[in-house]
Length: 58
Ligand SMILES: [Zn+2]
Image (tube, rainbow, N blue to C red; front, top):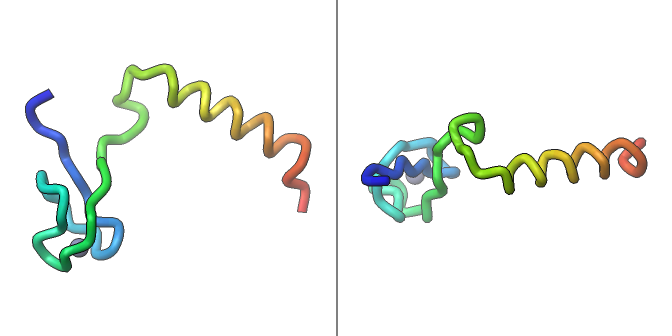
């Protein structure tokens, strides 16, 4: 991939850099999960669902 869209978790600025040019916070990847073909995310989602089903009952 050539363009990785990053997003600042602090101020919400979108950038292609690892550091937010607005506030200097380290950015995270802003690609929506539904666009990612990686099935590892699907496994995580299943694990989360299974975990919530039994234990998180508060
Ligand atoms: Zn920022």
